[in-house]
Amino acid sequence: MVVTVDELSKGLRRILAAAERTGEEVVIVRDERTVARLQPETWGMTAREFFGDLPGVLTAEEGEAWLRDARELGRASDQSAMKS
Image (cartoon, rainbow, N blue to C red; front, side, top):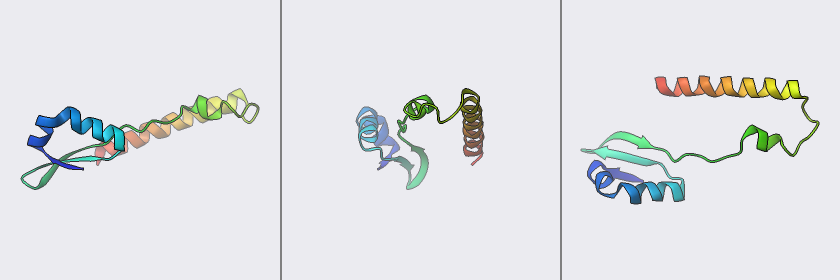
């Protein structure tokens, strides 16, 4: 969805509700130039929820190592996204 800065300021609640409902990115433009993008938060499972139905697949130590690696990967991904 593409909205102007004026449309966003006048209809922020409606636009955010639509983005949340549809999962669609909101592109904010001024003078036909993109000035920002809003992305709806993706809701998913936690690692504990995902692996909760798989008892015995990983040992406690393997599970902790997996979580450490996943968190580190997430931090690296966040830092990479902030640079671009």
